[in-house]
Image (cartoon, one colour):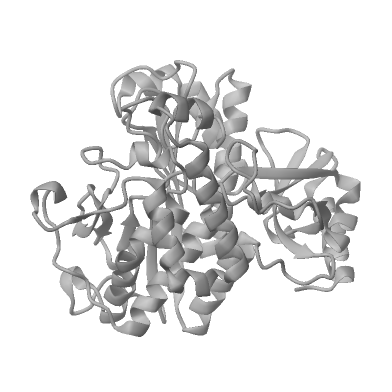
Length: 435
């Protein structure tokens, strides 16, 4: 980490680059319930914030989705939010504002063991230590909850009706330096999806947050309200947060050109097998809400089965060979937009590295509907089961560290208790506008 003096100097230079039109800087982080939390400073205070951090109580590690707290919450102590100035971005849809993700440190300047973004950074560093490059991307899906966006799934009628809105979104993302690969109407009424160019693990999580902030801001400017919740209507398909990733060594994609199935190399297959083996526990990171399990049901292409398949959209792990070796990647489909992206990506990397170390191999492929296979295992159908698998995972406990693992588990168990006995309508009403 840079010294305080170096951080302050970089912040002054960064503020100058933002120009005179920016008045405030948002410092953002994501809690263990997947909720985006913020503090903000006037731009003239950015150097002080970078040098000394901005105070944020450690009790946020115990916050639930509805702003109640797990029993582990304490009113004692303080942490410091330190902005990552390399990601500082002027917000095109929020004139006068800029945003930067923040890492959390103790008052002594030491990394906070419960910081989710620093955890993802440790996993990215572990990839580099192994000589691996990880390219990742998170699909962003949302639903306009005020009735806008009627029309058929993937339909031109829906795009025409909101063409000005989507154009403004594309412009804002472009002005913020983001590369959009696709944008289109999705399956549910009022649902859309945007995909961005892949990036490193931490950068991919940062990008997903920035895209969601931008979607929300553009929506507000158009008199609309966007929900990223995994369940928006009872019986609906909900919003996924699918994770795409590929593993590279020496400029070569380990998911292509190898001797294994569909061109997998042994190392690439072992990584994916490690992810598949750990999926029940990983759901506590990637499908972290009681509402997640209203989405993760068979027949909706949400990936509710612990299996893999080439271009199989009902399998939790979808292999995408791509048109060229560079495009080959794998998609984890069972994750949703309630996830803290840093926890999700970091956990997947930890599981994949364990698969490599153990020399794992993928089980038989499921080529059709997993429900008809006779052997595809159903993933946990409720948060309590995923939390139990997470609690029992020594692999994830070691990777996250005892403090972060315990904090995540406390939030999951507290939310299970808080929503016990609630009908789906009640769960959706309580969570629809939290993400």
